[in-house]
Amino acid sequence: MQIPPRLPKPRAHRAVKLETIMNAEFVCEAPSSVTSVSSFTPMAGPGCLPTRCSACSLRAVCMPTDLSGIELRQLDSVVLTTRHVRRGEALFRTHDVFQSLYAVRTGSFKTIVMHRDGREQVTGFQIPGEPLGLDGVCWGTHSCEAIALEDSTVCIIPFAQFESLCRDSRRMQRHLYYLMSSEIVRESSLMMMLGTMTAEQRLASFLLDLAARFRARGYSGAQFNLKMSREEIGCYLGLKLETVSRMFSRFHRDGLVEPNGKQIHIVDAQALARV
Amino acid sequence: MQIPPRLPKPRAHRAVKLETIMNAEFVCEAPSSVTSVSSFTPMAGPGCLPTRCSACSLRAVCMPTDLSGIELRQLDSVVLTTRHVRRGEALFRTHDVFQSLYAVRTGSFKTIVMHRDGREQVTGFQIPGEPLGLDGVCWGTHSCEAIALEDSTVCIIPFAQFESLCRDSRRMQRHLYYLMSSEIVRESSLMMMLGTMTAEQRLASFLLDLAARFRARGYSGAQFNLKMSREEIGCYLGLKLETVSRMFSRFHRDGLVEPNGKQIHIVDAQALARV
DNA sequence: CGCCGACTTGAGTACAATCAATACATGTGG
DNA sequence: CCACATGTATTGATTGTACTCAAGTCGGCG
Image 1 (cartoon, each protein chain N blue to C red):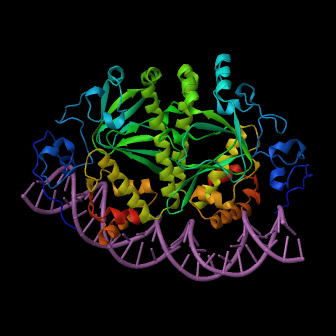
Image 2: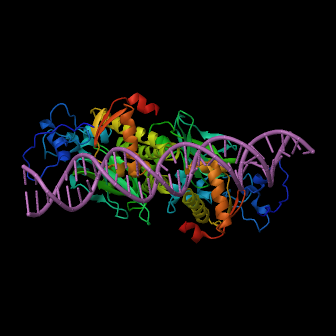
């Protein structure tokens, strides 16, 4: 196992972990040998978070691409605010009243469902541009909770207003259908994974899925760092953390992946897909 | 193991298996000791299938309860046709063009997602009043296939027309959101099951879920017959059919359930929930 | 009656879980 | 700056659950 390259410590107002250095806020300072892709900011500079969708570089990821000027202005008038969520804190919890949908702007989240006896299942990891909160529409309260994996920002989309926007705009309407249906399809393929795959196959398809999502955002799918722990990956894949770790070691031994802790380099994606 | 009571054989145009006799089409002929609940018909007599939602006794299950007269008439003008699907046949297949949503009217279905290598995962079983096809909204083609577990009927809800109805009616709109979100929540809890539960717990929660759904339709949740095979249950629960069978035997031995093949009698629901 | 498919049951096996020890990274306080 | 504490990750040894393979039963049907 190689030691990840040491980075110059940026001047910051509080203690900065290596993990934080890897964040996109500092990506311009990072040496070119390390491509940080698991955190993003839609605009160039740190702290610069426009609340207008019309000016957001992530719009193509989370909204329809063919919106008219009118629709964009309407959208701007609905999505007025963002919210910061610190690492480990909840954006919403189970049984919280559902009021808004959210779109991840920077950072990342996990969503978990809890059983009364304490067992928990991670149902997804969300990266920038991905929606959160669609589960709440059903009962008016959330049926899962969303926890930030790192200091993160979300756009708040008040559902009542978004709903009436959708009544005016067929494209927005379609998009909301699309988002919900995508979530249904995503969960189906997860069920397939949990129901039919071996530990090795689960981890492989997890890594390939993440890689594809990063690539879709214009980042390398071959190199990224995970914001979630082995245990969280395990909870997602229906495995124990030791098993996840063993599978990483196996992939390393077989030359498919170079894992340096949370820093992942996919060496042979084809072979990973064949597992 | 008791033998299920023999029923008088109804005159029918083709060979009728015991299973078919248990169907609701003949429920009026069945002795009162057997309550058949896993098949339904919304109206009293066989063959009598009104195409109008306004006259359908299942409306309360699959549509909002507070529709106005106007909305009901609009709904009637959209949901004009039903379709019969024979046991084992597909209502739609993966990659079929998505045109309609469906609501199960009589009989039952399973939905499955297939992996290229042949592995398949059952993602759900649908009984009367339950929707089918919500997965298709996302890509315009279906991402799973729906197979009839017995001779069945569905109401066809052409999506384009339903969509425009939803634009006129806020209640219908909300209901479509509700249906999609419910599916998301349902799948989340399935993921929890697949990810964290033992074989015994999975079968227990499967039986209790079915029971609850039957009860919600006004039927006994304690006694019903399964239309799916042990293998199909296994595909749903992420288990092999032998394991499903063993768990049924264990429940029988422990006095929780009396399984007579496909005929299920839940003896101790509390204990089943504690498993 | 005999065949066939669905189901049950048993014996042996394999994969992932558990238990346990150690290594490593991160953050704290001396 | 280093020693130490804490949480995270890796690795090994052992166990247990569910899978595989196989035999046998049951019920339906030609």
